[in-house]
Image 1 (cartoon, rainbow, N blue to C red):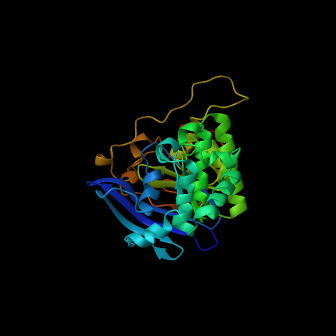
Image 2: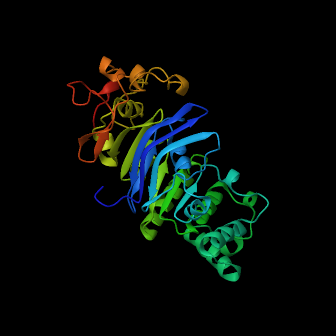
Image 3: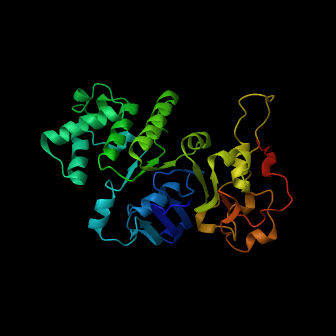
Length: 330
């Protein structure tokens, strides 16, 4: 990125009672940029942002640096974090039913966010809540503000969560698998809504997902994580045409073709994600990698430039080897 990052995460490490969850994550998000985080469950996608915002439990040990608009967030006093959460960085989750209070009307919950982050109250706050409901596409917004969460569908509740996130006019929205609990049609509507809101408000977006297609369609840049470490950063266009890291190649090779090929068995990545209490030496993906060599076990590989807009953490990049897992470049 050529601009000064909105958020700069450097050397972020997290462990829970001595068990590592993140192993030195480096990540930057520019103003107005859309970045996708992908990887298997437990790779550290959500933990990265929970740690950045100081939302992990007390047993978590967090080190490194998280700078937002020039201000360090790790170790910042609680009043600073209270202003950042919701005011500068908002986060929405995959299950709105567990995020909304079932005994309060949804409009009241949005009004509370307006009061905390914009000092609004009374009729002005209620009117702004209705406007936000209209903005996120909730029908009959004037009446829906008085509904309880159980009176709305899953898609409408997710729109309420997005409205609540927008209430503080954040510079960055972190969407943690916001479409997982929704059917395919509603998923598409929510993703279209996030893209539209980003264009209209100029906010940056971090989209966490398991779905490579979803993030590639929504984001300009993708960050692939494995076992608490970033293994590749790549533009969405280059992800499908020339993935560099063997793990990324393995993920893509497991995608079923939609047309043009006869039915065939999909290649699978052998083995399983290593136990964080017993990580292998060097590259954590080494035991599952078809390109594994002795040099891979020497140390955790750093991210190195592959080409413009692409970096990967692999010690055998540039070797004259065919793509891993039989992947055929687009």
